Image 1 (cartoon, rainbow, N blue to C red):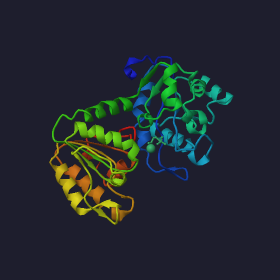
Image 2: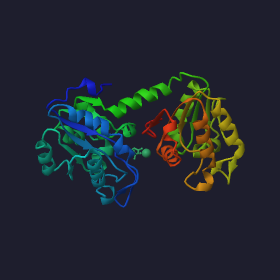
Image 3: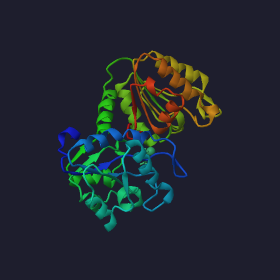
Image 4: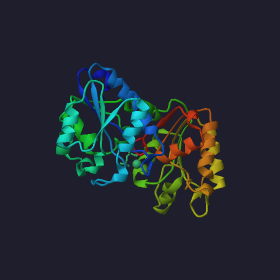
Length: 329
Ligand code: 3PG
Ligand code: MG
């Protein structure tokens, strides 16, 4: 993989893919973390002589149609605030007006284009759409780690027709998550919860072959049982639950906490239960407390997991927090 330092940005118009898929409510950004972590790459590129940037991103799942609720305009305002610099907003990157804005960018200027998923070509991975977007640019930078498990046009097709590299966030994610695949200390324990068993099954199997134990919770544990999935002996499923299956039970929490506290290497992705309803958050809370208390190298990722960690003000207890959910796995 190529990184920023492998590329000469001097005099270049740079196309930068970020993941600004932020939680929004009535046009208000509820959490700007994904915007914050994109800043180092933007700042790096802007320091290069006579460079200019157009940023592209998706937001939500508008399914190829314009949806004013999913406009990136609020993100442009927030980015402007965080960078202390004007952000030119491109309403339609495929229009002649879009062309004009891009062509007339001056040294050090930044523009943000409207939500890529307003165009059907993005999710379809359409090559023509990719070329229409990137033909103005000298180089493409992908810093959208958390969307990079998608074979979409901006992720998968643009790098096939432009000199490309990974941004600083992507670089950090790859280097930290590579460590997770080669535990440097033992015992190494992975804790996997949440939903989407299809995506997580292969990951659990892979982790089971590398780690000493994989503790499973959340909806996937329930589904695995329902589907009579056969795991390796070091994959541990819950023994008891609260209210049918909404949270792991006391016995399971205690067993998981004990295992976690003896570990020297911990990876966590996915809650243990329906934590958004307070009464089913105890299992996830117990796991978090055990991780925080363990004398271990620790990383976590996934939207809900990070939300829970931030809400409990434990972010600083982790060695690394991945911005990816599915992408991390
Ligand atoms: C995410 O938030 O996980 C990424 O932005 C990907 O979004 P998606 O799950 O809608 O593809
Ligand atoms: Mg997602």
